[in-house]
Every structure is written in C-alpha cells, then in structure tokens.
Image (cartoon, rainbow, N blue to C red; front, side, top):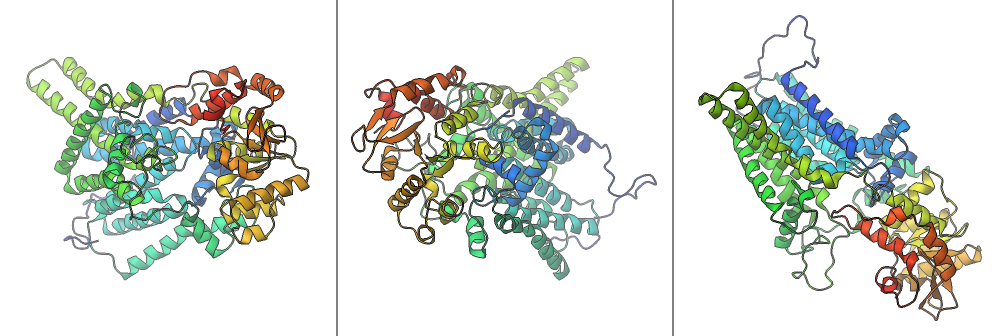
Length: 638
C-alpha cells in the first residue's frame, strides 16, 4: 500500500495513562454507540425472527448445523462450524431458533461495528440512527431473521471494513497499522470457507487501509501464512465427507470433488459473458429490488408505487448527502464508502450475471424466457446496507444543520432539541415502514413449512420412496428426517439432483436404488428414474410423487402407468389410462381433514411466493373431480 507517509511519520499519539492497558476497550462514544446499536438491532431481530423453519435453503442449513454436514455448494464449512456452535449455545431455544440466532447476532453485531466506525465520522447520535436505518433495510432485516449465510457474510464484511478503516488512520503506530493490515488479509481469506459474497467489501476495505508505507517481503510472507491459515477451514469438507454425514452435498472426498464444490460446478455458474439477460435489464432488476428496501411494508408488491417509491428516491438523495458529508470529513472515508456502495450494487450486477427475477421483465423478455427461481435481492445485502448507512448519515447531517440553524435564531432550547430529535427520527422510517412485512412470527407463515413437510412425509407408506421437485419439498423433509428423526424410513429422491454424481452415489451407497454403472456415467434422466423405480419395486418399497413435481417428470418414472391423486402425492395405478390422472377419493377425504385450517388462512403480503405456492399445494387435497381447474393448474395433473 503506497503513500507519502514515511515509517513512523504521523503515527504518534499520546502516551497511555498508567491505568490504561494495551487492548483495553474503553467506554468511548464510538464504543457506546456500537453497543447501543447492537442491542437495539438485537431486540428488533429477536422480536421478528422466524420461530421455526422457513422456505428455500434455511432448512438445509439448519440440518447442516446440527449434523456438521455439508450443505449445497460451496459447502460453507466455516459457517457450519459457527452454526453448530450457535446450536449448542442456544440449545434451550429449540433446534431451529438456536441456529437462527447466529443470523440474529451476526446482523446486530454488523450494525454495531458500522455504528462504531460512523461515530468517529459524524458523532455518536448520528451513528446510531444511521446504523439502525441500515439494519432495517428490507433485505438486511430479512436475512437477519432466518437461518442463512448472508447475515454472517455481512458481519465478516463489516469486520473487514473496520480492520481497513483502522489500518488507514493517521493516528496509529506503524506496528499497529501492520497488525490491522494483516487482520484484513486474514478476514478476506475467511470468505472462502464462509461465503464469497463477503469479498464484495474488499475493494472498500483496501481503500480504507490505503495509507502508509508499502508492504515489504516480510509482510507479504506473513500475509500468505495468514491466508493459508484461513483457508485451512476448507479442510473440514473432505474430513467430514469421509465420515459420510447424513447431509453430504458434493461428497468432496477427492481433490476434484472438493474443487467442484468450491467452484459450485453443480449449478453451472455463468461467466461474465454472454449475459443471461440484457445488461440494462439486469441493472433495472437491481433497481426494482432497491425500491423494496426502505418502505416495502407500504406497498408489499414487486411493482413501484406512489406510496413507496418516493421514499426510495428520498433515501437516494439522503445517501448522496451522506457521501458528501463523509468526503468533507475525510476523503479516504468518502472514497471507501462510495466504493462500497458501488461494488455492492453495480459490481454485483456485473459479476453475478443473473437472469431476470421472477417478477421482472414481463412484456420485455421473450415468451418462455428463463427467470431466476426466486428473488435474488439478498445478493445485494451489503450494498443495500451501505445505502441505508449513507442515507442515515445524510439524515443526521440535515438534523445537525437544522439544530444549528434553530439555535442561531434564538429558539428555546427544549424546542430546538425536539426539532432536532424529530429530524433524526426520520431515519427510523425503514423500521416503521418495513415492520409490517418483516415479522416472521405471523401465522400461518411461521409454521407452514413444517406443516407441509410433515404432511408430505406422512403421505408416503412405510419404507417408501418419495420423488420430490426441489428446495421447498426437499429441504424441510431433510431437516425433519436428519435432525428430528421423523420418518427417516422414507428415501427422498430429488429429481433435479439426479444429474449430480454425488447424489446418485448416495442413492447407490445408502439406499441401493442405483447400480454403480449409473453413478460413474450419466445414462440420462429417463434411464436413472426408471432404474430407481425398478429397484424400489424389487425391494418392495412403494413410491410416491410430490404434487410439486411436473407431470412430464412424473411420467418418466413409469410411462405405462396412470396416476391417482391422493392429496399431496400421486401414486402409480392401473385404474386411470396410461399417463392420465384419476382421483383417490377416499384418500383425498382423509388428507383433506388432516390439513390444519389455520395453514390455509390468508398469508401476510410479501414478495416471496413460496408460501402461496405451498398453500395452493395443500389445497390439492380439496380436489373433488377431474374437471377441477386446481388439478391441472396447481397440482400438475396434466
């Protein structure tokens, strides 16, 4: 790192007092503001955190935490270790919430670190309101209240920024500067075993630290040793894989398999070119997600609105003022924070090269264009956090200027304080406006994933095989089977995973449903599923098909069979004609009664359609005749 400051120049500071020990944390305004922010966000997140399973990856991650297993690529071994520790520390909260507490703590601490830094730039009161504003941005808040990796990645990002900011200060000794630089290198390398999304913060962290003499050969050697130390956490993947944990995605027992997991080869990650969607549309998609951040509760739908979008524009202006404030405070800080929001938004768009989100591009993209499976706003969590922070700083700047102007005009001090406090309170808009949609404790959403998973498992006969369609009818099942030991006799065959050699290997090693020849070489989907059905039949293991699985995939299993809808599953039958669907009225009547009425109550408004989809699937138990449009449109009856 270059700079005009020579060794030791500009690094002197007052001698420590006799009672001040090195490394002692003093109750300075920055420390107090960080502690207060952490407590405020902690209370907010605990009050709204999911009490049970949530949709998508959460259930799989909870399973990995309890079993020290390997979740989907890139495997996140460091996160798994931390989550296992969280499960032990908060065991009294239950097997689900004890792991979710890792996200709660990580997000609250991230806000506290941000406030500690900002207190040096704008003062403690402004730092607290700015950090709380950042922590209440929709994507940040959402990740804080369920089990996911992005909250922990946000904390690692904030630690990187704090280390860089400390390393680049003028009032720091040369040796201390070197230590903070080394810590920054170590933290950056931890992104590999934790989650690579934390590296989005690296350009800004380097910009913070860019002061002082260039690193020498000794520094570089020490940094390399720290990088290797951080990367050693990756060794957990093969070490656990050889023990064959119940969750063993990728089964990385060889170097080739390990690299495949780390590189996420299972998902065919796109390069920078060709673009998966027009670049202008990808940027537009990001702006759509940005419009959800400040006040999504005012209009909890994907489209812009006159009620919500003006606040987005207002927050954009406040963010610009926040950048200006930081540049005036110190160019280094302004430069780094500008780089942070740029890399966390525009940079993520360019690097990830995503398809359009599920709710974006209608009328623009060609009919049948492939969309992302879900909204990907969480990839931008650091950028949106930075935006909220800068907007809070801008609002604090306005509040301070208002206080000075009011005081200069001779207004009574109590009135001046009240007006200033009201201006500061504007930063709480995300807390108030997002609160109605961020509370995951509301029913039926709070228990819907568990209800659906239990009913789906119960619909399979003893020792049966269930063909599933994807995340939301697989991951909650894995959790119930591997953590709570519920219906572990059922073998779940997830159709989209059959293309992965590791999953076929599991079906061979653990369940005897595939021969080795089907593991080593890919014989095609039709051949694989028919072999599974044949082997299951030979072992007198009945099989069922999730209603979430599309009809064309269901018909691959046994092209000569018809199918009876029994509620949440289809069973093969010779009663309907080949490839057609009939109704098992007795089974439907039974399962109709087993679906709790509370699970079908109106869902809170929001953008994640998973809950609505699962509710529609639960209504498959209410199909009464073959002419019911629900049978085809929702239950994949044709």
